[in-house]
Length: 106
Image 1 (cartoon, rainbow, N blue to C red):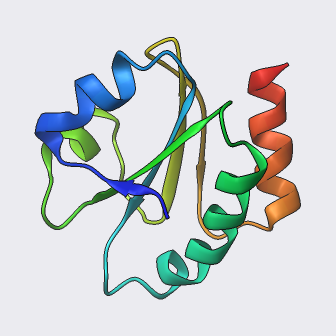
Image 2: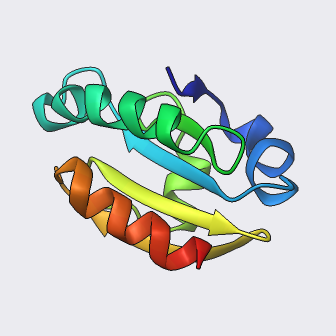
Image 3: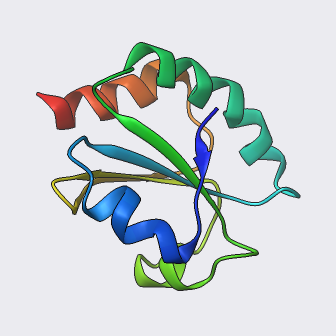
């Protein structure tokens, strides 16, 4: 299960992370966000020790989503060395997500 973080924790957990970090911008009322949770949990197992997974509730945290122009959810942003390496919006298959992550890790 991805760790839920707040705006205040973003810099420590994401920007300063030694590992690449996939940030899931979501909200509890968002059907596609809920549908993506099992996919993200599977990916978390696949990339254990290589990629960190966190989620930010956009209803409770507005600063970070606005910094990265998150307009639709779910939005996934993969950070590497503190910078945006990949960004994609909407529900995706596990294979699609793996391709996106693998491209950044390569």
